[in-house]
Length: 219
Image (cartoon, rainbow, N blue to C red; front, top):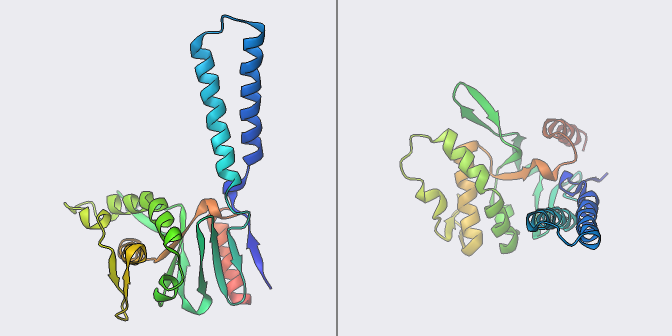
């Protein structure tokens, strides 16, 4: 049996576009009935219309399905590509946590720890690797701030060489090499290799984790 996940990131896309068109229509209407509309009002309404339209279009271009879950494994779909992991390759999955003073803070991601990262590195495209490197910079910064607060030099985490040697001795170059090294860093900091944003899920992240556990157990 196959289950698909529609991302929350696509929700309200049409509403945002509709609000943008409404604001634009309001601006045009105001200019039709009055000639002395303050420039500031026009700028604010025009900017608001543009922002809502960009947000709406950004949501619309996201894939309608973010995850496909089958008895064989999990497939992650992104507008820049996809990755796939077999259930047998998953050691565990959970919501990563960082130390924040005297308590733990949840990161808005679902993390997967793998037996063999090469299965991902052998298939992932440079376009998707580049997109994930960019999208997960906030998660990396969060992890460094709370997990390694005493470290004086963070350069190795951001200025990554484009060559990575896997635990099995295989060498990856270019963006795939950078992504492999980032996976190693994130495992060191948070304990997981791959991450899926909460925005790519269709429900609360802890509800989704429990749902995924049930699917894993019944597959």
